[in-house]
Image (cartoon, rainbow, N blue to C red; front, side, top):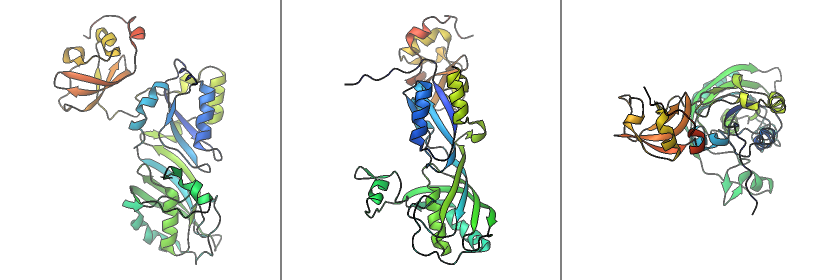
Length: 324
């Protein structure tokens, strides 16, 4: 049995990546893994190969927080073609039949309210959803008919930002969207095109936001490679609890850190005063010197650790000075 490679010390945190068009999200993960020398990498949601924009990667200890980032809302800039549907609902697929008469801007704008709010969306047949353990796109490529169950999604914003009808047979619409995690923009293009009677598909997609993160703070693959080559990749990482400001924080007394490293329950005396709004059983961040040291559940007498991010060896050298 192959031995798992150890994590690289110090490469723990969140890395915001501005994905280029072309590679899969898996390709980008693999490259960052090689550059960082860090085998443990999670993510806050993938992008299709042709799409660009924000990928949130969680490295090392941060992988244990992936579940807290997957559910964040996603913000996109998208371009839709009303020149007919495709097999993949985007520009990489083959055209399906003959496109109907292209709609006007006014027609599409009148349809958009149908695609806002809570929706039941059928994922694209060429998606990574599994049917009996097999990816849907693998079945579709093999010529099989793929029938996926609808899923509940939420479209919080879907606004037409520009309309280009310079090609009368294929008008293009640019749109700004904010959607719940798991929403397929390709499927919105497919369904909007069907409602318009012309068919439609996605021709460009850029993720500009994910949860609390914005693509403006993301790094290109070139800058990540340069930082790795200069041994300063750790400088690009955000702290373990970046984006988790909505989870209340309690300061841990320095003297209690070795006990916390062993998973011990923290008493109220070992923590900063608990704000009145925190309820028993609520998830809290335990911090020391401004850094996340554990996630815990608040109790009537303190906090019960669930995920600890320090170890006894590293904390044994800390000062034993109690919390003021």
